[in-house]
Length: 416
Image (cartoon, rainbow, N blue to C red):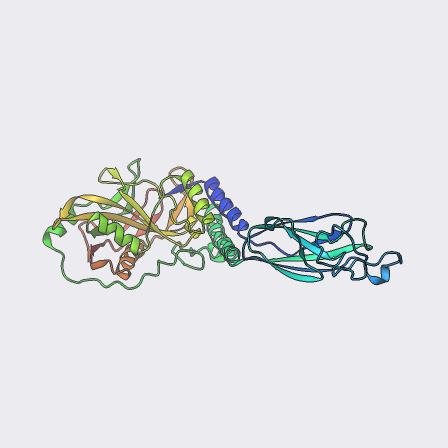
């Protein structure tokens, strides 16, 4: 089992929330532009492909206009105004609303009462009045600016919404495990009896397709070698834990290729590195699918590989995963890989140290069959067979104290 701290989970969720927030496009903004203010900086940084919709109206209504010596400022400008030398945009009417895009040089563009600016390169938007000296009019403009994001920015905004949804589901599971909230009310994917109840935002691969399993007896030599395998793995303190519940037969290169084709991901082993990796991959529009996995032991050594399968971010709370060890023996010249697979469905107290740890689905045969199903679906399993060894594990507790049950059989997977 992977032990996690509250700080670790909070750090991961906070970091990805911040990245998700950065993905959003700007909201509509309102500005006041006056003749005496020079350029008004909107603070908007624009990207190629953005469209900026600008509308403007006079800030003083005709009913409130009392100074007959100066007309009300109109964003369309005045065609009756006397010519002024040195206008920022000589081709536009004096007093009109204009805009400047820094990346496109100092030459302004006419906005008037309404205009859509199509951004060709990275820019910064400023607004102003087309005047060079004393104000031509009374008041100013009320300007509304709506940035319509480019396709890339819109996609990032959609992704941000998806990340927030995934994080919400992950946090619900976290809160359920940490504070004992009713999981049946918080949509965490864990039913009251502790079995998995997958819903939106949790790993969905547990709904394994029915296996196509051979009913032919295994080779006698292979059965003898399987009988010699340890039945359970252990932690560094030699506490017995998860059961050995599957075997894969094939070369390492083909094993790794098959698992990759079946969408299994190699797990991280370092918590600090995992937080950084999660943030960076999310920022790069990838999904973090390598939640850290603790070290367990078989044959007196730690796992050779750890693999996991889950939806992005929800992996913080729910994931399918397994560890595998290369056996000391081969069969018919093929390497033999021995595995222990479980399905994390939330968080619970670690009975060894009162810390926080992942809680497993007690029906561990489901994860055993899920592993076989994913490989079979990816056309990487030549043959699958069940084998019941002597002294099978049917009821036990893992190293963190959670109970589990099984029919005791190994799933033997022969790769293509």
